[in-house]
Length: 141
Image (tube, rainbow, N blue to C red):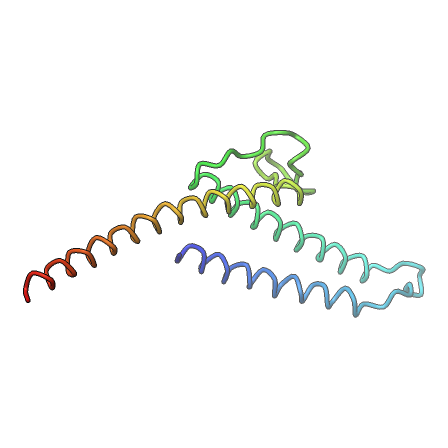
């Protein structure tokens, strides 16, 4: 539970940075400079792409941690992974959108199965406790 909250807060910080980069890119004028170049738009676009990649890598890392926790198979096909544009090591890959969606669905199915297992056990335990109290109340009359 606390892992999920920590993830949500960190994701919120990432999204604030991404939103700021998007706003900066949108507010940068499209017309070129007097020398015929538009380096400000280019650098704002590059910062936005970098923010998007970092966000995708962060989400992918969280999904992989969840997959390990719930024993869900991690995609191994090469088309399920993208390489960071400025990557220097092969571990800087992240999941594509389709692979992340499939992995997220598999994780949620496993979480639901885990929840159903414990919900049934707790319900059974509460029913047994209620039955015991009912029998004790009947015989105490």
